[in-house]
Image 1 (cartoon, rainbow, N blue to C red):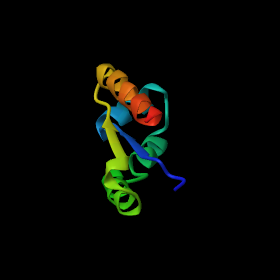
Image 2: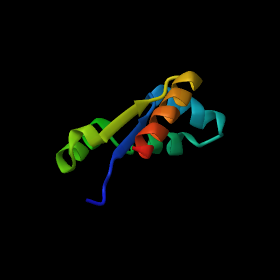
Image 3: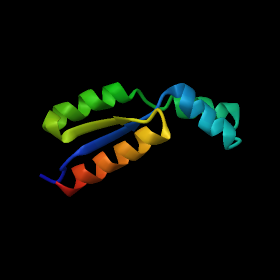
Image 4: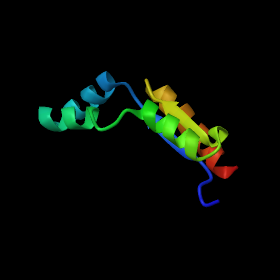
Length: 79
């Protein structure tokens, strides 16, 4: 098996909107980024392809979440 894990990184649409707005993205580009995909469907599809225990989802709501998720991601990749 070539796939050892799937790692899905998420944040709320509101948080993403604010981040992209601060980076001076156009409203059109922000809307495009917010509508690119439904990550819950990505999680379900990934779980059908490989063992569900190998699919990991991380949600960032703050800088603290980001650091904790980064630590978890590094731990998962080392296994």
